Image (cartoon, rainbow, N blue to C red):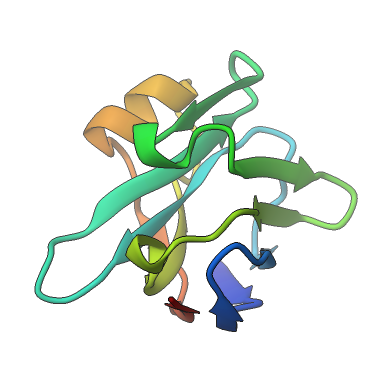
Length: 130
């Protein structure tokens, strides 16, 4: 089975940090187009950050630029999201999702349009207290 398992969420004070992890199984990161997405009800799902091996590029939602960093450990088949200077507006359920196979998708296309995202992990809750 192709699966993604996210972890690392929790309760943190505003200004604090968390690192989310997403472990992939059933496929490798030889060729990847993958990212983090979040949903804070009643809002809809939004893209947080994406990364692709096609162009070694990254995409970030404007409000997280300079605070969040996305990265991949290919050897561990793991995606990360380092979140610093957290704000109450970052409170949400965070999901990792991937296009498997990557189909040549770059980070910008994945982040803006969400094309090809066909594998989703279960979310991890991030709560930022103000």
